[in-house]
Image 1: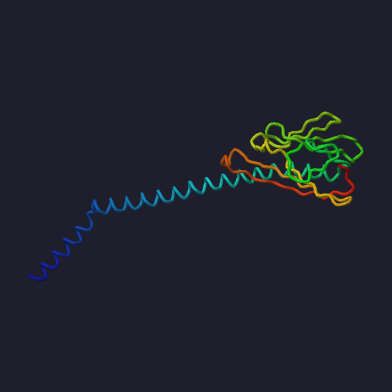
Image 2 (image 1 turned 90 degrees about the horizontal axis):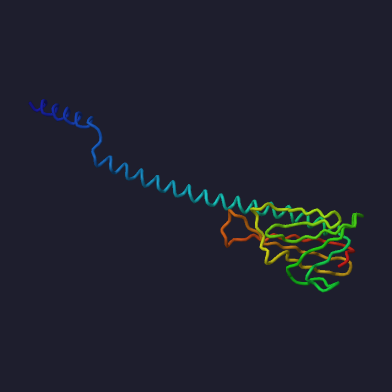
Amino acid sequence: MILKKIRSKTKSCLCKSSHGFSLLEVVVTMGIFAILMVIIMSILVINLKVSMRVKARSYAREESSFALNLLKKDIRNAESLSFAGSPAGAVPTSSVPLVVSVLDAGGTGHIYNWFLNGTQITRLDTGTGNITYLTPDDVTFDVSQGFWIKVNKEGDNAIVNVKLKVTTGGMPKDQWIYKEVAVSTRNINF
């Protein structure tokens, strides 16, 4: 008799567990799953935003570096430099927004005027009249500041520092990148 009771209890336990999950177990499992999905999706969205900002900054740096490297080459090969906004023959000793004119020493006698046209860096070859836009439309330069140039002159040597303020559409509106190059020159006229 006792053995029969134990067998019937065992059978009823086995049968009970084969009926599936209780409602409480399903609700708890779904709640935990939902919380985990919200956390994972939040992390994914934050990661995508950061990735897009990094891409935008990298793009702005790349595009401004291209333009500044070309300006650096022009300054290094120049016979003389002049700066609009400075008195004749004066060399800017502090950061001032200026237009840069470079007289080519390569024998062409062309003068290259570098300036910001709208929000783009522009290079005008006065010999041919060709205007070259060196940056795409989606890279914005702070026009109010222009090219920030500082010249340190000692004897025949001079170091010309050029600085730009850059942003792109993918970056937050209040974030700017400052790009700067230094060019060492020798026997250049100002």
